[in-house]
Every structure is written in C-alpha cells, then in structure tokens.
Amino acid sequence: MPTYNEADSIVGVITELSTLDVDIIVIDDNSPDGTSEIVKKMRFDNVSVIDHGSKKGIGPAYISGFKVALNKGYSKIATMDADGSHQVLDLQRMFIESDSYEVVMGARWIEGGSVSNWKVHRILISRFGTWFAGRCLALPYKDLTGGLRIYDAKAISQINLETISSNGYCFQIEMIRVISVIKASIKEIPIHFIERRNGVSKMSKVIVLEAFARVSIWGLQRIFRHNADKLHYVK
Ligand SMILES: Nc1nc2c(ncn2[C@@H]2O[C@H](COP(=O)(O)OP(=O)(O)O)[C@@H](O)[C@H]2O)c(=O)[nH]1
Ligand SMILES: [Mg+2]
Image (cartoon, rainbow, N blue to C red):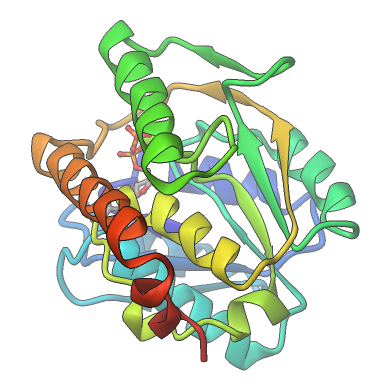
C-alpha cells in the first residue's frame, strides 16, 4: 500500500485487512501527517513500513514495494489504496480468481462494478483515461487506472522494474503495458470503489498530464516502432 498523508484512514484499512491471511507493506513518502509513525505504533507483526524518504509518487513507491515483496518470497502481490476506497471483500474475491490468472484487476467500469461518492470530473477522467490508453496501446481492458490488483510474483520477477518510468497514476497503465509484453494472463473482476471519507485525494493536473503525455508517446511508438520500445521491460 502506497501512502501519502493517510493518517486518518490507515489504521482502519490495516485493521480491516487483518481479517485476511496477508502481510502488509506500507510504502510511505515521508508523509508530513505522520502516517509512517502511526503504522509503526500499531506494532502488528504482519505489517512493515518502507520509509521512502521524499514524495516520489506512487510509481516509485510500488516498485520499492514489489522489490521487497519479491525478496520476501511471496507468491502473490496485491496492491491497494490506503484511503478506504478499496473493499477488503472485493480483494478477498480477487484472491480466489488469482489462482487462475497471473494478474487480477479490480474494475469499476464493467458490469457489477460501481463507484460511490466520486465527483463527475473524476469519473470522466478515469473513463476517458482507460478509453484513451486502451486505444493508444491496443489493450482490451475496461479499467486501466485502478489500484486494486493482484499480481503473480513470478510474473513480476520477469520484469526489469528499473525500466518502469511513470511517477503518478500512469504507473497502473504502464504495468498493464508491461504485463502484456510478458504475455501474462489478465482478468478483470468487478469491484465497488467508495471515495475516501477522510483526507484528500493526491490526484493533480501534473498526474493527469503525465499520463496523457506518456500514453500518447507509447501510442505513437506502437504505430511506428512496433514492439522495439517495450523489450527493455523484460529481464
Ligand atoms: N507513497 C506514495 N503514495 C501516494 C502518493 N500519491 C498517492 N498515494 C497513495 O496512493 C493511493 C491513491 O491515492 P489517492 O489520493 O486516494 O488517489 P485517488 O483515489 O485517485 O483520488 C492512496 O493510498 C495514497 O495515499 C505518493 O506520491 N506517494
Ligand atoms: Mg483515493
């Protein structure tokens, strides 16, 4: 779980997750509100914190988390927001599916999926983002920007993680781009996304622009250079 200023949500999310047989790695970008210290004070045996030093964005945070998870030898790696938007019950259903697929993506924009309390502009950005990325990258999925996913650790271990360049939420799109290069199986499962009740979103114009620029460039590369630009992703 990547965190930036989630002091008001993190205890509830970790407590709820303790109903599952999982270890939790929190990757915190030196949150000024003390998120990291709050987690450490919980003293849960199955929870560890990576202090990431400064605000580097969710992309680098996830990559550090993946590296630690691979070192610890886990077989599956789940990613989840720390603000309470992702439901533990959805994650539980996804774990069942993850026995049959290398990547399970929580999807809001498929039958059975839903979003609560999200402003219209967020819905539009998210839906347009997935549509645009799907067209540019020739990916058939319905929700490319969500953060609730389960990856098979073996699939992640085939990736040259240093070559993943996105800092913001574009990371989620880039991961699926990479996953399709290694031809891992992907399944979308409907989830219920409930907008946070505490704290504020870290979504910004810079994050949207980064995604738009990177996806546009990848789209052009797909047309003009085929797969040559993607091979560096694979070990
Ligand atoms: N480590 C780290 N986590 C972040 C950063 N930006 C967002 N997050 C975390 O990523 C998750 C999703 O962020 P959020 O602001 O809720 O995005 P939204 O749901 O799209 O509005 C939350 O757990 C955030 O705390 C960041 O720069 N660094
Ligand atoms: Mg959120």
